Length: 327
Image 1 (cartoon, rainbow, N blue to C red):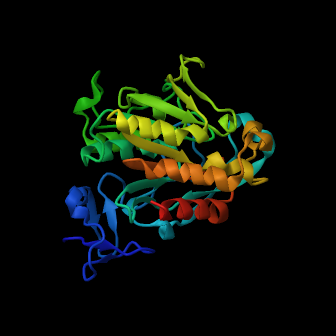
Image 2: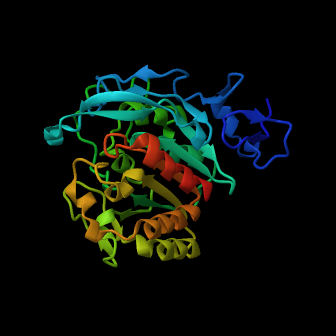
Image 3: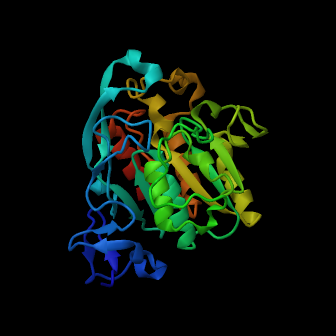
């Protein structure tokens, strides 16, 4: 079936309207199946599946692996998961976290693709999908805008490598389906960024506490077992990306919406540095700078981080809609 447009606000395909973005141009639909209503990724389950404790360590009982569909922010839907928020912060008591029923691959009006998931490990699959689709091809730099660095090298806590995925010294022979399995079953939110550390020429970390400090420095292993990279204040990101483009680099923006959690009292229970208001720019200015950075990227990955940013149905949904509407 030939897809011509995706109607804004639904995941329904309309062939009768004038195309605003022909997804067949990207040969993207070979990775999806049409079930009569929506396009669902062949690399993710068609129906939600429980996470296997033999694979990933950090997840809550009841948390699931969701389907990946072509859609829009209007398709955001949630299911509740209860648990204590991370072992080191259990004094906060049990909480209810809202995870996504479906992950979304969103074509924007500006002809960009956004992969939106709840946990950020799915970004790994998105980056390789972007490479396979030739959305990126030059040496690529990642702009990581997040409440955390997410960059500890994978810890050997996993009990089972994904079945059917070959273990090899060189990853260049892995298929896109192999990489989907690795994202789903092996990587966690703290280590996905460092797993394939040769994929990016460089990583620039943009954290909330860097705001208003004019940070623009190169880190040489400032934390044990983390990836090296550029540390940037959000105010410097736009110029940094412009310089990268002039030098011939492609750019991916990796945005975690918990970057904004410090603006919303009670939204972020654990890490006090995210809530230090004196470190933060005015919200509208910070959002504007993030949008300016995202608009310059060849590909965008976004995480909602339910167990780090609690008001998913209100604040997080609004942020996702506002950002993607500008792309």
